[in-house]
Image (cartoon, rainbow, N blue to C red; front, side, top):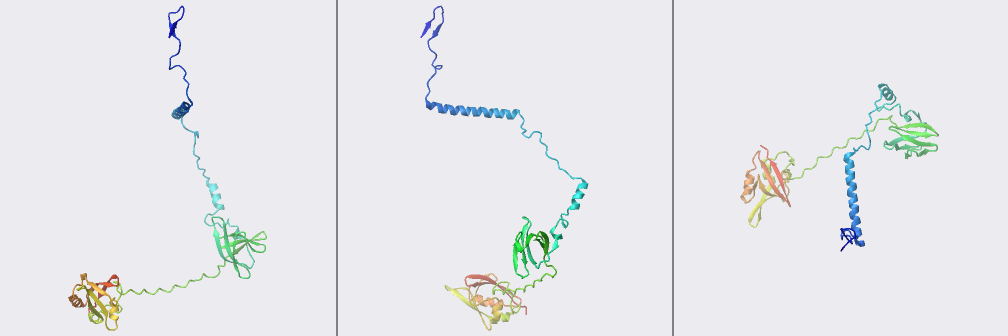
Length: 292
């Protein structure tokens, strides 16, 4: 509702519009609004940082320059290498030039730890009893192990430095050569087993090995071999009692006539490749017959 002011032709509203009027808000609406305000502030801050990074060059170290290598002059290098030999450091080893001790001690071993500069030594006293001493241990009354080197140790004897060297006057003991190992006994039946008497003759093989067919379910499945005579030829052929020949030169045994066929192959210079069933295993056996 509007009223007309006296002396004016403009009609003013009595109250503000609804969207301009202050409204009371609950406490539940305050939390989400604070979160939105915080997110907006962070977004503005990141935009400012991005803009600052794009405008201002990034150089926290300023005009950084790498250090140049300092090379010593030739005169300084000659003076340096004249006073230090990296390969034969004889001039820098003080303990080596120390007085050799007159104590009745014997040095038997040295354990040098170059990483830590320590170590230990095995030293025997006048009684001959050997003991291990670490650097700093007392060896005898008033005598302390001060340091170890490659071939000697340094002793601190009442403040004086003395050296005790390994005894290298004698020749090093020569180890006795080990006895040669005996040749391994070849397993009979292996393809590489050598014959006891060289190549077998056909007559000796026929006389020393007996063949009998093995029948399973009415079928011949192999030839059972047994030694005859003294068994020397049987063993030389690489066979064992109870072996069953399953095939000869790749041809399986399937009939009783194969036994006669096998005996017919015992000719001078023949080479027989047998497949032998030995227990639960199948092994190859090679037999070479002499030409005479």
